[in-house]
Length: 94
Image (cartoon, rainbow, N blue to C red; front, side):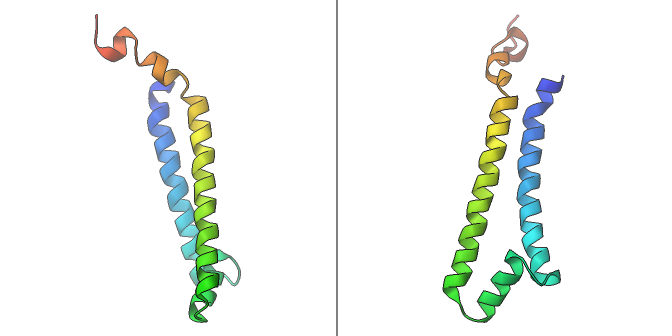
């Protein structure tokens, strides 16, 4: 039963990480004095396009690394999914 829910659970974790990252940056733009969000706003207000793109690049790399980390964990925990899907229950064959 647990192996059947792991696919949906890993998708929910991946989506949760995306929303958490976006919400942290948005929260930092409005309520913090430090952080990537505040630096992004400060660079944008000073028309520092190089700084703005540098911060956005760092955030994009961080998001890619988090996604890769989740993908590694997903592959580790869902090893059985390919082998289990070929069984008689999963294919509908009797």
